[in-house]
Length: 402
Image (tube, rainbow, N blue to C red; front, top):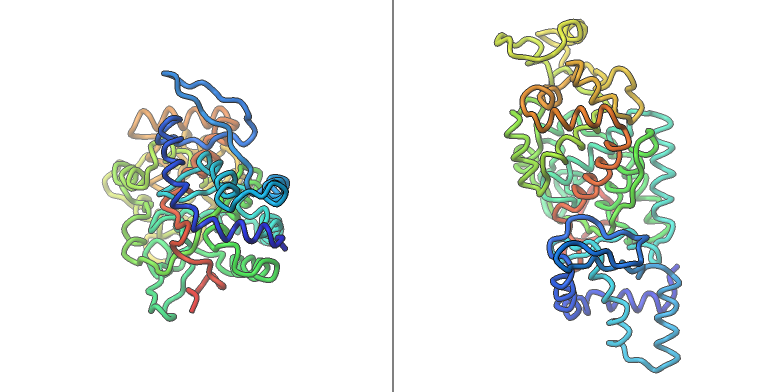
C-alpha cells in the first residue's frame, strides 16, 4: 500500500496539472516540439540534436526513492505544497505527452507496484495452456486502439447503465476477437491487490507486450496511465480497423489517420508471425477469377483443401505455417516466397517498392524487425489515450462503473 504522503502527492497531481502544463509546454518548445520517440529512461546526459536543440533527460517520479526524498525535503524544510508539487511534477514534461496527458512506464510504481508482475504471470499461464492466446491478446490491443484510441472500449459488453452497443459485434470482431476471459482474470487479480487503480486499457497494453515477449519476440517498456472509456463505437470498429481484403492504399490511410506511417504498417503486420486466420478472411483470394493474386500456386492449393469455395468459413489456418507459435521474422520470409495467407499481408510484397524493401530488410535481420516492432507498438499504444480527468478506472472491464 502507498504511504499517506505518497497518496497525498498523487491526489494533488490532477489539480496541479493545469498549472504545470503551461510550464511543460514552454520546456517542450525549448526542447523538441512534436517529439515522437520516447526519451530514453537510462540516459542522464543531454543529447544534441540539430540546430542547437537538446533532448532532456527523464525523471522517475514514480520511483519510491524519488518520492521519499521529495516528501522528506518538504517536511524538513517547511516547503509549501506548491513548491513540492512543482518539484515533483515538472519532470513529467519529459514523459510521453499525448493529447495533453502523460503516459510513462513508472505510473503504477507506488500505487500498485505489483501490477506488471500480476499481468505477466496470468498472461504466461494462459499462453502456456494455449499458445494461440498470445496472438489473441495482441490483437485485442490492436483492435482497441484503432477505434476510439487505446481506451478499452473493445472490452465493453452490450447494455449496462449507459446502454452500450458493443464493438464485439462488429464485422472485424464478431466470432473473431477473443481473450476476454484472460483480461477478466487479470482485472480481478488487480482489483484484489490494488482496487480501482489499474485501468483495463493499460491491461491490454501490458498483455500485448507480454504475449509478444513470451512467444519469443521483443520486450519493451510500456508507457502507462491510460484510463477507460465510458462508451464504445460499433461504427468505428466496422470502419476504422484494416480489413484483410482492403487495398493497400485503404490500409495505409487507416494507419495514417491514427498517426502511424508506412513503416509502422509493415512492422505491425509482422505480428501475423503468430496466430490464426479464418477461412472466411482469405477465401475470396483463393477463388478469385481475375488471376491477379500473387499467392504461390502450391501453397494456395494447400489452403483450398480445408477452405472450400462453399462452407468451412470458421476453419482456422496458421498465419505462419513454418513457426506458428514463435514470434520471429518468418512472416516476412513467407511473403518473399508468396506464402502470405491474407491478401493484406501478401500485398506488402507485390505492389509498393517501399514496403517490399522493408519486408526484405526484416526478413534478413530479425533484430531490426524486433526493434521497429517494439517502437511501433509503443506508438500505436499512444493513440488518443484518456488521461487526467477523462474516462474512468473500471471496476470490471466489461462494464462502465455505476
